[in-house]
Amino acid sequence: TQLLEQSPQFLSIQEGENLTVYCNSSSVFSSLQWYRQEPGEGPVLLVTVVTGGEVKKLKRLTFQFGDARKDSSLHITAAQPGDTGLYLCAGVRTNAGKSTFGDGTTLTVKP
Amino acid sequence: GAVVSQHPSWVICKSGTSVKIECRSLDFQATTMFWYRQFPKQSLMLMATSNEGSKATYEQGVEKDKFLINHASLTLSTLTVTSAHPEDSSFYICSASSWNTGGMGSPLHFGNGTRLTVT
View (cartoon, rainbow over the protein chains, first blue to last red):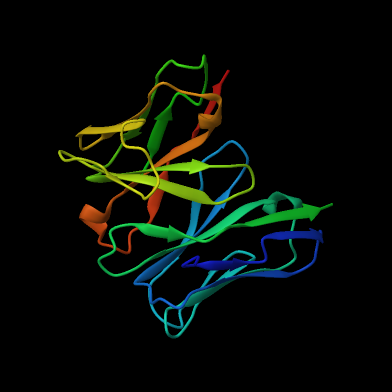
């Protein structure tokens, strides 16, 4: 059983559309990160959320951490081709010592 | 920001040879580094947790004798793929955490990965 369920796995949209990626778990996380990865490179951190109910915005990206700290979402407004990539959520459970990664969402934004 | 350097970025080797991949934290001390394997369009699969000065902790199903990890200093961890075979071909990524300074909520900083091709 995957600890962090990420959906959808693949998403192909037109430039200008909005989208939401979800990251769900039955476990509580002390923090959760979202990363974006381009082919042939390592993941790059987008945001860290640590407080239940927290909402963070990064330009056209909005990140939300669930009240119970078991789930998170990433919403992109007016997607652009430059947003294309693999989006990964990763949660850290208290005293776990390591991050647990979701399955990833491959986003393709067509011009 | 924290920078992690991974070397080499790509390597091609013959079956049966060994390959060493280095992961360095350039501007912070990392007591813990992680090694992942990634297949195309898939998420990261944690292979092992590397702790400075102690033995690495391997995930279930990862062969310790095949994937040798050494974390000799607070800024360097190495992964050696021994007696490589074509099925070991993959994208290997390391990450380091500044948890020792920033707490458990601190994010991971990733290297740019190593593309290993075994012929």
